[in-house]
Length: 102
Image 1: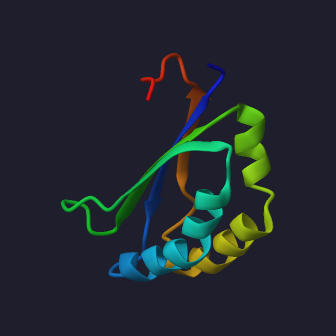
Image 2 (image 1 turned 120 degrees about the horizontal axis):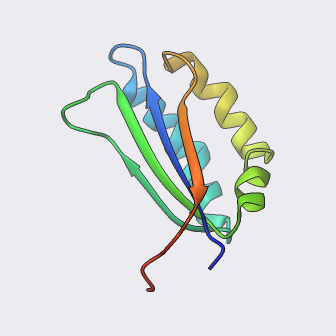
Protein backbone atom coordinates (compact mmCIF):
# COMPACT_ATOMS: atom_id res chain seq x y z
CA UNK A 1 0.00 0.00 0.00
CA UNK A 2 1.34 3.44 -0.93
CA UNK A 3 -0.73 5.23 1.72
CA UNK A 4 0.41 8.56 3.13
CA UNK A 5 -0.11 9.64 6.75
CA UNK A 6 -0.56 13.21 7.99
CA UNK A 7 -0.54 14.27 11.64
CA UNK A 8 -1.83 17.78 12.44
CA UNK A 9 -1.88 19.81 15.65
CA UNK A 10 -3.90 23.02 15.83
CA UNK A 11 -3.56 25.38 18.77
CA UNK A 12 -6.58 27.62 19.19
CA UNK A 13 -6.79 30.99 20.80
CA UNK A 14 -7.91 30.78 24.42
CA UNK A 15 -11.44 29.38 24.62
CA UNK A 16 -11.97 29.28 20.84
CA UNK A 17 -11.69 25.54 20.26
CA UNK A 18 -15.50 25.11 20.05
CA UNK A 19 -15.62 27.78 17.34
CA UNK A 20 -12.79 26.12 15.39
CA UNK A 21 -14.54 22.76 15.75
CA UNK A 22 -17.79 24.24 14.38
CA UNK A 23 -15.93 25.51 11.31
CA UNK A 24 -14.36 22.06 10.83
CA UNK A 25 -17.71 20.25 11.15
CA UNK A 26 -19.46 22.63 8.75
CA UNK A 27 -16.81 22.72 6.01
CA UNK A 28 -14.32 19.89 6.39
CA UNK A 29 -16.39 16.98 7.66
CA UNK A 30 -18.55 16.82 4.50
CA UNK A 31 -15.51 17.32 2.23
CA UNK A 32 -13.58 14.55 3.96
CA UNK A 33 -16.57 12.19 3.91
CA UNK A 34 -16.94 12.75 0.16
CA UNK A 35 -13.22 12.35 -0.62
CA UNK A 36 -12.42 8.77 -1.74
CA UNK A 37 -8.70 9.46 -1.24
CA UNK A 38 -9.18 9.82 2.54
CA UNK A 39 -8.77 6.24 3.74
CA UNK A 40 -9.03 7.26 7.40
CA UNK A 41 -9.51 10.47 9.36
CA UNK A 42 -9.51 10.93 13.12
CA UNK A 43 -10.39 14.33 14.64
CA UNK A 44 -9.58 14.67 18.35
CA UNK A 45 -10.22 17.18 21.11
CA UNK A 46 -7.81 16.30 23.94
CA UNK A 47 -9.49 16.70 27.33
CA UNK A 48 -6.23 17.74 29.02
CA UNK A 49 -5.43 20.39 26.38
CA UNK A 50 -8.51 22.63 26.00
CA UNK A 51 -6.94 24.75 23.25
CA UNK A 52 -5.61 21.90 21.11
CA UNK A 53 -7.09 19.95 18.20
CA UNK A 54 -5.25 16.97 16.78
CA UNK A 55 -6.09 15.16 13.56
CA UNK A 56 -4.74 12.07 11.86
CA UNK A 57 -5.33 11.58 8.15
CA UNK A 58 -4.52 8.64 5.94
CA UNK A 59 -4.58 9.27 2.20
CA UNK A 60 -4.18 6.89 -0.71
CA UNK A 61 -1.03 8.75 -1.83
CA UNK A 62 1.07 11.81 -1.03
CA UNK A 63 -0.25 13.39 -4.24
CA UNK A 64 -3.82 12.94 -2.99
CA UNK A 65 -2.89 14.65 0.29
CA UNK A 66 -1.38 17.59 -1.60
CA UNK A 67 -4.36 17.80 -3.96
CA UNK A 68 -6.82 18.03 -1.05
CA UNK A 69 -5.05 21.21 0.12
CA UNK A 70 -6.02 22.85 -3.19
CA UNK A 71 -9.75 22.05 -3.02
CA UNK A 72 -12.23 24.93 -2.63
CA UNK A 73 -13.46 23.39 0.63
CA UNK A 74 -10.01 23.25 2.20
CA UNK A 75 -9.20 26.79 1.07
CA UNK A 76 -12.47 28.06 2.56
CA UNK A 77 -11.76 26.17 5.79
CA UNK A 78 -8.23 27.56 6.10
CA UNK A 79 -9.47 31.09 5.49
CA UNK A 80 -12.36 30.78 7.96
CA UNK A 81 -10.74 28.86 10.82
CA UNK A 82 -7.65 31.07 10.94
CA UNK A 83 -9.30 33.69 13.13
CA UNK A 84 -9.70 31.06 15.87
CA UNK A 85 -6.15 29.68 15.73
CA UNK A 86 -3.06 30.77 17.59
CA UNK A 87 -0.74 30.40 14.61
CA UNK A 88 -0.30 27.91 11.79
CA UNK A 89 -0.84 24.20 12.45
CA UNK A 90 1.96 21.79 13.18
CA UNK A 91 2.04 19.24 10.37
CA UNK A 92 4.08 16.06 10.10
CA UNK A 93 3.62 13.67 7.20
CA UNK A 94 5.26 10.50 5.97
CA UNK A 95 4.61 7.46 3.82
CA UNK A 96 2.74 4.82 5.80
CA UNK A 97 5.07 1.88 6.41
CA UNK A 98 2.21 -0.38 7.45
CA UNK A 99 -1.58 -0.04 7.75
CA UNK A 100 -3.79 -2.56 9.52
CA UNK A 101 -6.09 -4.12 6.94
CA UNK A 102 -9.69 -3.61 7.46
